[in-house]
Length: 101
Image (cartoon, helix red, strand yellow):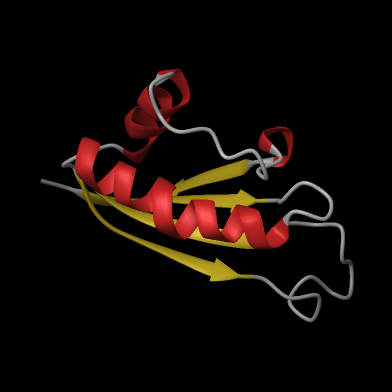
């Protein structure tokens, strides 16, 4: 089976970075790993202004999901899954995704 990667660039709502990071690390990642067996690992990286050329209003984190199979199909399923715990500190409108082999 092909291993693909889903990368998600995410942004916290203004003033809610700590809440966003706690939710992502303590709730969201464990839920993903429990509910989606094709996801073998998730690593989230905190981005700094030095990585975004000094622009503070870009994304706060990048999460890389290692997927057994199609990362695009996984993303479609995740986007449709209304049973996942919603992160109140997550600015969902600012999300950017990429897929790679």
